[in-house]
Length: 437
Picture 1 (cartoon, helix red, strand yellow):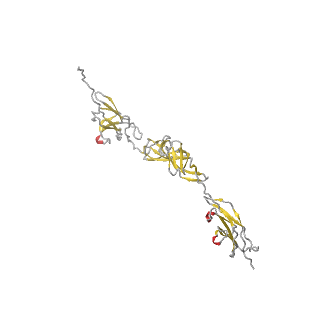
Picture 2 (tube, rainbow, N blue to C red):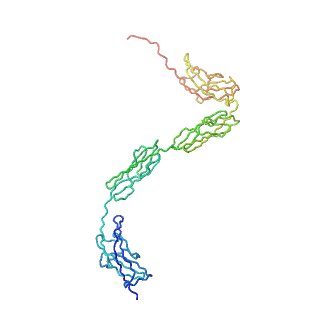
Picture 3 (tube, rainbow, N blue to C red):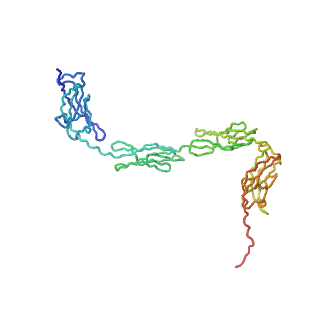
């Protein structure tokens, strides 16, 4: 006959408290393994043994008082938190257990193992010890950087917090409540200090962090060419280049110039010189400029204008000077540069250039308003009396000159020159007499 299964668990002891979080604690109770029946016969290898373990405040281990610590475990120990399983602090409790075979057979309860549940005092409240700032040591001008604050407490723990932020000076930067520092433009590296203040439990801690606002050298963004859109054949035109930088500023620069036409050449100074053409020709003026390892290129299309033979260019440098005489009338002088070649550079026969000078009150120089000062004149200046010419005192007038060549070719009107006939002012006092009073 099979012997009854009535082996007893033998409780060996408890391990010390294992620290947990807050008031929690962890204990481990352990026991010897059951390997035989009550008469010493070994339990068959095919049988599976598990354990149920209990606690109670009843030393008699009444079934109704038993409360489970663990159940159906194969190991010979149980870890528990007295607070979680409901053990009363400062009182004696009793542990017991039973072995269970997979056939359903159970052992008797082990003898009670007594244990007094320790009283745990709550930890003292932690206090704020210090505050620290984390974030970049430098921020580029016109950029931003994020800063965070961490507190250290009296229990050695650390936590991230949201402090009150400030920055000094405020000349070059500002900081948001979230800790984002925003910088302004600077002309050289500038020093600033990020400050934080945090208060809790009546304790305030502050921290600061030095920050360098870095002056970032502007980089080359683009290049643009300025200059005439057309140049007469056999003439020249000057071109300049302007660089735009990453900070929005612009400067004049000296690029490397080039062109793509057999009818023109451009100097290192940007002067485009053209040769004769039989029809209008297009040329591309190119500029290339490098700064700080960055190269920018740009182009401008220019038309080389074919000038028909015998075409006269406008008279240049028309000017009014004077008065050159004041008696018997105030006399002024209108002058201009001589015209000695046609627009294509062909010489005009000597002495064949004849000039006509006009004045008008119309700034548009309309033909119907032009009044001649001199006609078919071979000289390059003429003296005139404004009043005799019909000009009204303090009236704004405009002068223009044309030239006619011996071949009959005539230039367009020169650019209008603005002039005002000034009132000469009142006469000097006369007829002074000394009287006695």
